[in-house]
Length: 140
Image (cartoon, rainbow, N blue to C red):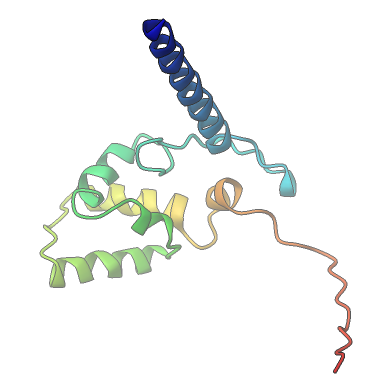
């Protein structure tokens, strides 16, 4: 009897984890209906970054020292990303990226730039249009 309860408990945990994983992966790759832009970007489940051929280089250069969330929370121009790299090199002993710097900057500019269509489609809803504001009457 005790063995049956343990098996049922383990099965329930497995089903719960499978359900969570399915829901999580569906949310990460769902299509964006706002603005009519289809979200065709795949998201790397480990880092949360946009999956592309350059992702492994970005992960090797960037997430060796810090979380990918530092990338996810910012939207910089190419010059802004370059400035951040120089700052990390000056103050945090980031190594010279060499030829990989272009690959990293191309990736960051494309997916995490301020005006990136890909970034807007994957991470932001479309801007609201035709908003009608109303005056709030204050009661005292």
